[in-house]
Image (cartoon, rainbow, N blue to C red; front, side, top):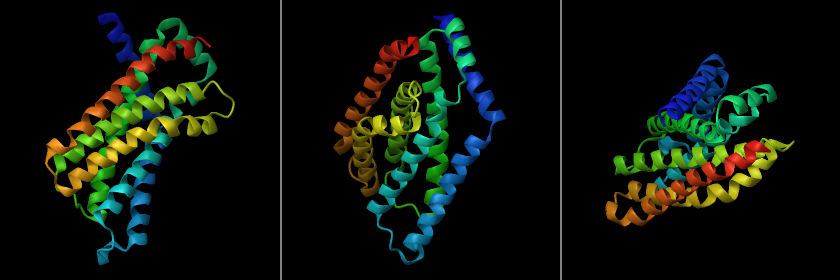
Length: 224
């Protein structure tokens, strides 16, 4: 177990080192979030108070969803054939998919946190229950990272991987996004947290199913 954890840690360090050397990917995501927030500010004319809380919430999750797709899509596409062959000789498929999911989870948490701060600063913060809203961001980051990483691994085996990922990710992300919208809407309205317990349990179950399926299915994808 300790040897496996060390290998997962080494693979994660590799991901962070590559991201630090090629900062255009992270910088591009941050620029996308800031640009999208600024466009929303100009479009909704927030100074006049025309942006209702439900629209505020919906637009934020749309921005975060597209940020997640663009950030996680490169998980396997950027890997060259020679590097993948090297991974095949030094690490197990489970270690590779776990390291990818953990790295993408950290990346999504950073993007979600910075996106929320920027969005709330520019367009105002109508959220009445901040801890519950932050919980939805954490669960959403884990769900997006797990599901999109698995989909990216499947899509990387096809020629037109970008199109295939867009098609495969939609039915996987849809129930996750629906639960996130419900929880965040309750946080916006300041409702009692017990009213969101069913959605939180469902979201935890979805995240757990995605993570288990990733561990079960990715070895077959990797061998192909």
